[in-house]
Length: 92
Image (tube, rainbow, N blue to C red; front, side, top):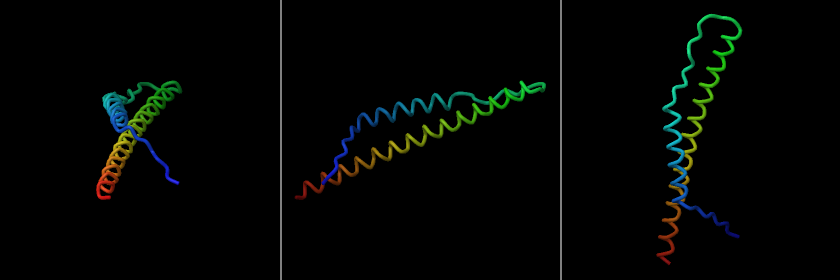
């Protein structure tokens, strides 16, 4: 029993481009938390929120970059597999 996987490479490429645009927008954002002046619990909490937001932002950029890499590798793998299959079919 054979399983077929249908891949629309042009759609995959379009989604990769969407992610690349998203990555460029996210990396252009300045997420450096502002310096807090003064003290007290409220200032400490605001500083913590700023640091957490920065960490979330950094993690999201990494996730987008990893997803782009995965999708590019998947596309390349399917294209190579398709070319190999086409060569084998020609030789029959």
